[in-house]
Length: 269
Image 1 (tube, rainbow, N blue to C red):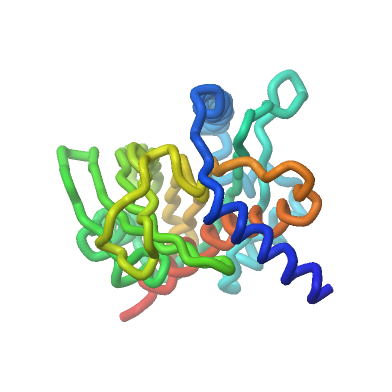
Image 2 (cartoon, helix red, strand yellow):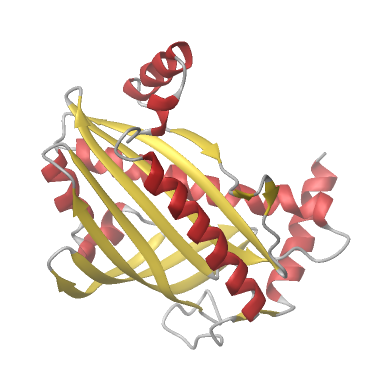
């Protein structure tokens, strides 16, 4: 088992850092189509089912709420289909995860104020976020910069920008979306302020990242649901059986990390 893990790490390192991957128009088109269908599904869920846990039968729904109030982060993997079939993504992989957490003792107003403090998110989401900055702000619309650090055998530094939009539905419900507009990999992780690789012609660790948040104040706190859709390079031919589980663990880990650190920061005195 250990030998297989070490081999997977070696293959991932070689395929991700030695050979560059090109983001092709067909890959982008497939991702955009996947996102369009996913957003259509999200739109049909509201307002009837704001939190997806409420769509479950009574027994698993109640068990899920017990786990959330006990401090757990509940996650599940999603896969948007078209006519019952997976959507092909040439030369790329789409990672689609959803998570839910409960922040006891906070309010919707405090939660939104915390998340919109973009000049200081690196303090709360380190080491995954190394630098954060608000670039533009107009009402409920934000443009932000985040320098991300990803480590899985190798360390990768990404300079990323996002368009973020918040929408208040009523006194206890709000939603937001964040869509990446630029993702550039830094050439050397040892020099975070150094040169960048060409956008879309890099190691392919992350080409797109879209996040969808839902906030619901209830039960003496706020439920936070986060759904993330990301795009990475495809897996080199012949190594899928070995590398795929290794790579696909990263999006789930990032989702859990974000929800956990959001909860912990909001619950601090």
